Image 1 (spheres, rainbow, N blue to C red):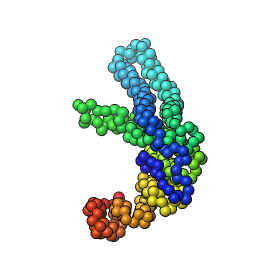
Image 2: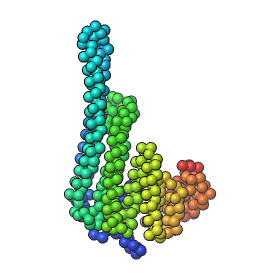
Image 3: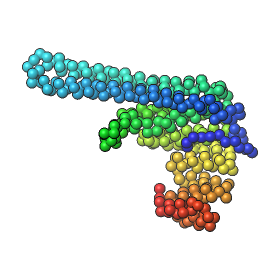
Length: 336
């Protein structure tokens, strides 16, 4: 759902503002976050690269030993050194697998340490202490942003030199294959921690709509991570949690345009066009004179093949001399 902000609103049936500190009021916290993002991403790159370098090193070592073994095989076959050469190959394989299992057990601890290091850094510079309204939501937002920076991060570990630009796609694929799993695990750790911070905040301000909207956005981001990894069961279960948060928003503030805007964005991110259309239709009822919302609804109609309704909106925008009316009709026939 992108960057989430806190908006001041009045006349609510329930509390929708953080009681002490607004989420983005801590200028010092926001000013210092980028350097912590860079530091953690740099450390994460080092950790991930160390394991890839370990595998490449042993692969080159074993390939070299194997090449030398077969190159000198005619001489070794009649020499007592043959057993030593063959034993050297097996020793290399044995050492590799022992160290591989050790590294596989060690890596999750290193990733958790990086996440906890980032959390500690955030808490040290955040002026709002833990347990007070706003603290956990600020931390959650920082975690979500850091996870967003990891989008396609696995593709950029290696850059093709200018003289080898033709191999850039191959290099990107190798980078994705080598680092994709580590990036996936790091995203999960960050977003799961963000969910935990939201839940802590909800226990402090249980009826704050911004907190539920922010939690829904985090669930959407988490569901996308699972979907990108092909984990459909996890994707659907997390998506259901996001929808439940959307339901809370709708139930407590059914006539709030901001709420239905968040719902529409969330359903769009979850790939649920019918629900998105329903929310935009509700939003239009609440803001009947807003031509941008009308244009948005017309675009949704055309994308879903509901051309008759889309044309009606086009005619209405045309009569109102809305400048984007022609952009709307240009999308006619573009089914999604």
